[in-house]
Image (cartoon, rainbow, N blue to C red; front, side, top):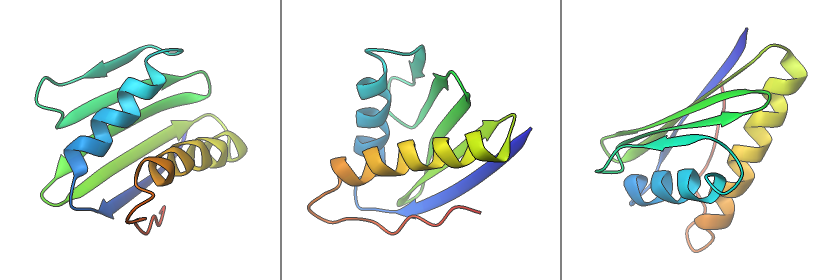
Length: 94
């Protein structure tokens, strides 16, 4: 398994976590904590786990291949940037 993580500083990490999970819930299996502090999205390529860490949204993706991991990073980042268009955060995957 290949994985990547990003911790994104934002004023509303719980709101964006909830938006990401709810958005993908229309097409994929998801789970969301009642308080929007943790979530999981089961993408076909691999899982994405989300959590609130202080004033940041922590994202972790996993996939079987490097290419699939890169695709997951792109999908999650693009959607987060779409939701946070008023104040786009910096997303740096490691």
